[in-house]
Length: 120
Image (cartoon, rainbow, N blue to C red; front, side, top):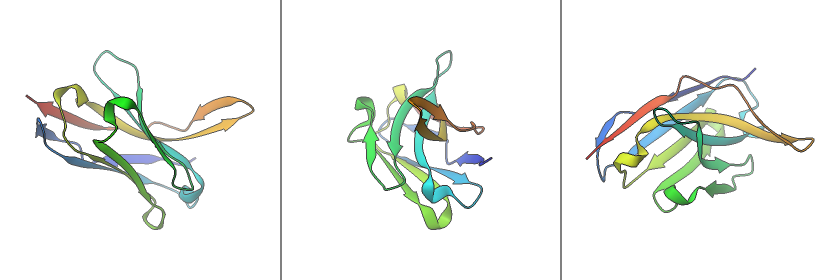
């Protein structure tokens, strides 16, 4: 089963930028539809952005215009460029694969995530 390792999170000031990375194991990364999620303390996982195997992207309204999801299939890596960060973006960020099979939305395995903290 494919595994994901997130990195790039750290403490940043309001208005700052970060780029998160997600390294995937295995040889079929290019076939996966991928997503970034985040989880703030005491809350459930929240979808941030998605990218299909073909490169089509989608963003939740609260990150549109600020975050960019991208992928490098040659490096088996997913990215999230985050600009104009604010304290509400503070969370542990996770990547995951997703698919829809027989009408059911299914996620892959969660990694350990990477902590992003935005100070005010």
